[in-house]
Length: 276
Image (cartoon, rainbow, N blue to C red; front, side, top):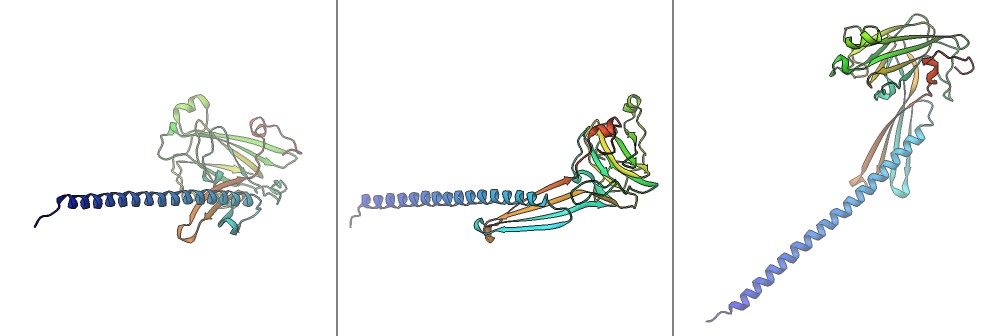
C-alpha cells in the first residue's frame, strides 16, 4: 500500500496556518477588548474626576459642617462631598498642607459670620495660651524653618500688634537675634509629629499670623485646652462613575480658609478700624 506524503504535508501546513490564524485572531480580539476596556476606564476616570471637582465647587458654598451628594443619571456619575469645620482645641493649619516660606497662615481668634466676615466684638479671652507647632523631626535644626508670629489683640477700634520670632538654628540666631526654641519635643497634634513648640500668651486676641522663614513647614495650633474658633473648612469630595462591576472613583481634598488680612497689617503695623 502506498501513502501520499504530499497530501499529508499539505494537511499539516493547513493545520499550522489555521493555528497561527486562530492565535493571531485571538490576540487581536483580546487586544481590542483590552483597548476598549482601557478607553472606557479612562473615560469613567475623567467623569469621576469632573464629578469630584463639581462636589468641591458645591461644597465651597457651605457655611457649616455638612455632606453634599448628587447623582447624574444620564452619565452614571455621583459626587459625595464631606465638609468639616476646622476648629476646636487643636488643628492642623492650612488643612495640614505645608505653609510656604515667607507666606504665612492666619490663626483666627474671633468667630466669623455666615458671610465669612470676622466678628471682632468678642476676642479670645484673657490670659490664654496659644501653642504653635512646626518643624520636621527628620531634618536638622538648620534645615527646618524659623517662625515669626504676629498677634493682633485689643479691640477693632484700638488694635495692638506684638511680634515674636523663634529659630531652632544656632548659627542663624547670631544674625537674626530670634528667640530660642524650647528643647522639649512636643506631643503629636491630630496624629502628626512636629519637632518644635512655642507657647505665646494671648490677651484679648483677634488674629495671629504665623510665617515660616528660611523654609516651608507644616504648622499646627493648640489652644492649651481652650477651643479656638472655626478657621475654615476641610472638603473631601469623591466622584464615582461607571457600572457597579467596574466602578471608578476619584477623590479630591481642598482646604477653604477664610480671607486673610492684608500683609501690611502684620509687617508694618498699619491699622484702620474700618479695615481691620
